[in-house]
Image (tube, rainbow, N blue to C red):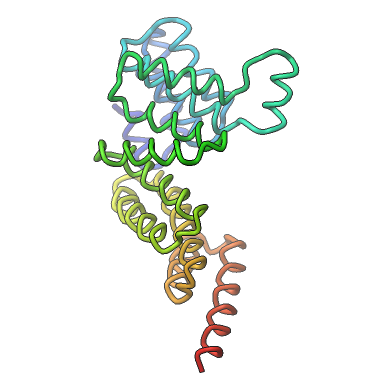
Length: 253
């Protein structure tokens, strides 16, 4: 309770201290270990996050709900830290690559919880990472249709990514705008969501630029710079959008 309140207020150090206090009082506290793992994952501290989730799985601390959460979280860490060099090295050493291990975890969750959208979303991401774009798009579409919560929003953003790759930036911009509106609403009650809002603004601006919507692109980048004025790529992208807009105007004249 207190750790969640501290985390919601952006007091990461206090939240971590309270979680360790809860674990010291009750080493079997699966909720505290899962929340600790989520805290580290949000900070991209992948090794520490995985340790927390592994402890839940290894020691059998959780009921099915938390066990599934820990498996999906470890799968997400594998996806986030996978790379081509790592994949090739794993194969040379006869070990399963991280994407393969992630897919196995997501599949295990779906075998006992066929309606788990978080696991289905993970399968879609692995398919996309492996180059199966059509299959990944189908998975994201199903998750988007089936869900109404945060995972549906993530699926919508992933669909937008696919549309950009398919050279359909106008529709992608509409989906990004939808995701951004949801994220901005959530950020009012959760300061930790501000990074997600900034990322979505940059993705929306990219789609608008690809769609030659330069005025909208500049407006979106302006909002991104207002929240993070030191973000150098946003300044560069703003200048690029201004340059392209000036070129489009001169051609119209």
